[in-house]
Amino acid sequence: MIAAATTATGLLVQSGLRTLAKLITTILVAAAAPGCSGVQSALAPSGRDADRIATLFWWMTGASALVWLFVIALAVYYARRPERGRNPRRDRALILGGGVAFPTVVITVLLVYGLAMIPETVARAPEGSLRVAVTGEQWWWRVKYFRPGGEEVVLANEIRLPVGEPTEFRLDSDNVIHAFWIPPLAGKMDMIPGRITYLTVRPTRTGIFRGACAEYCGTSHALMAFFVEVMEKDAFDRWLAHQATPAVPASDPLARRGADLFLSSGCGACHTVRGTPTPGQIGPDLTHVGGRLSLGAGILENRPDQFRAWLASTTHIKPGVHMPAFGMLLDPDLQALAAYLHALK
Ligand code: CUA
Image (cartoon, rainbow, N blue to C red):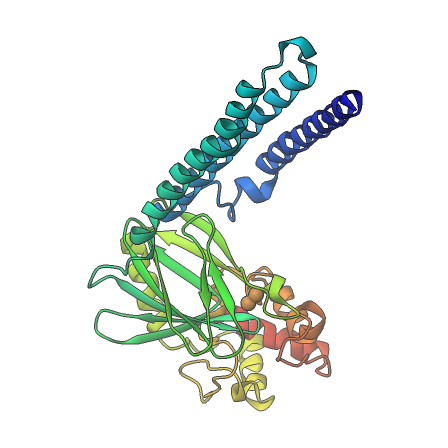
């Protein structure tokens, strides 16, 4: 009986040590992987709230590792302890102390530490802060900036923010639940149909970051991303002022032909290019699409050949997308359209 129990404990210890080895390997691989050091890592914080969340993560990970090591050490000690040293009263005290009191204290401390962060993390931005409305679409982001004078500037799939200042996002959706998440800058927030949620972001350094949808929302959920550029305040103001202007008419002949095709092919039924007779509201605003950091909601580079590929095979690149593929257009027409869109800086 005792021999069987000792063998079982030995197996438990072995399996525990294997789990530890796997955990350490996973943490090392994750830390070395591009995803954890690059533009979309919650462990490389560049915003106030992301910084707090990362600190909480490390405290939780550290505390869990210590508790785990302590428990495994006790298991090893008792598995190898000679029979004559046993003392039932001390064993009971150890079980109550180590199995009830110790975890209760550790979990309570971590819980209080985590809960204490919530009020500031969910607080609304101060009066006068920059406000941006983002609507989750399948599978892209409708973005609307509110300028200080009250003017609205509509764009899509791209966000730029001034460094060192709070920006309040007003989030919603009219289709399914999405979640707005820029891991290096802040926590995530659900975008729920029929409800408005708020998220305040306070970037602490300039740079380009990648955000993503963090709630499964259909076929192309994994292809619903965006880039965020955190800029100095002056550069940001210039950028936003430019976004508010209508599109500059195409100058080179290829792009001009593309502009004509854009109108004659009916693109304006779904898209708006401000300054042209295109009233479409269903798809992304394209007024300055050529100046964005990506195409197709964070999945393609902003290059003429990528525009062409997107136009010809939207449904292949982003399965389930509402925009039909325009593969029926001849290649020179696709190139003209791509040149026009790429020139919309
Ligand atoms: Cu939108 Cu997942």
